[in-house]
Length: 329
Image 1 (cartoon, rainbow, N blue to C red):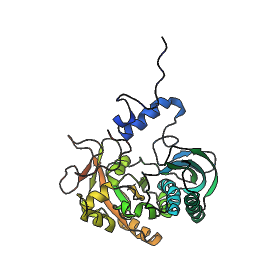
Image 2 (image 1 turned 120 degrees about the horizontal axis):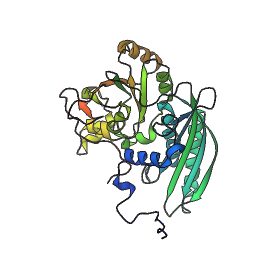
Image 3 (image 1 turned 90 degrees about the horizontal axis):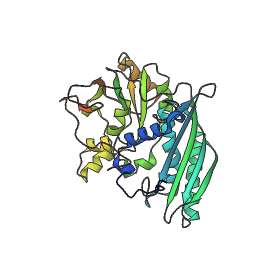
Image 4 (image 1 turned 180 degrees about the vertical axis):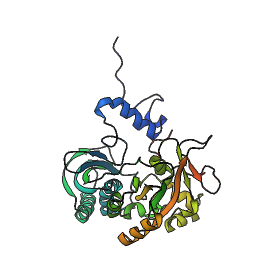
């Protein structure tokens, strides 16, 4: 008996919206089987790190989608720059140096040539600033009123930094300030490439990630099994933009710092034996970017879920937003 051909868009309840993002990624990993190598060569980090010879090759990909990553308020130049900077932030999280890019465009026939030229100009100027060569790509027609740009970026690193590597007792850190990205930060951010490269050279660095889905969503990805993050909430660097957002929203400024996302700062784990005072002094000699130690990794307490964020003052789970999820039930 022949099975009915499955439909691309499911008409039942078995769709990607019924599972969370991490579970969906794991399903895809299992379906791919032996053609999907383990992290860091395959899925699981900000980029895939493969070994073609001297150093390690970094491979990453990120899009910008109209209505999701930008709207009519954004200039085309800012959107073009954002596309590349999103990918550069992933390279930064691995401690790498960017190299070459491929550009893919899916757009409807009603996209303005003037707008598109501005988009390409913004992309070009950003590529020049960071020494990236755009070596090819593709264009395809999409449905009406659509614009999707996808960038594949390569880079290299002497020591790619994975997310996982932290241990119980290690400290948790974040660069810059967090929250309020929708006020414009999500377009004007600076990818932390020099800082990522500096951190990758430090012997005490255990793991690193760029904060794109919000600290509450991204920090657990740095935690080893059977552990939690014990956070000093007063040490989390809340931006002025988060304070302004709180004045007109139902959330407080800390909620915005934890959950807004698109901060494009670096969160990282430092070996517990590292001299924090000396580390901070060396950091200040290398960069003027603010740096905050926001907590530590502790063993998972009984009755508390793995990778929970806890308030160090009370020992209780931190209530508030969990960060961005691509697919919500």
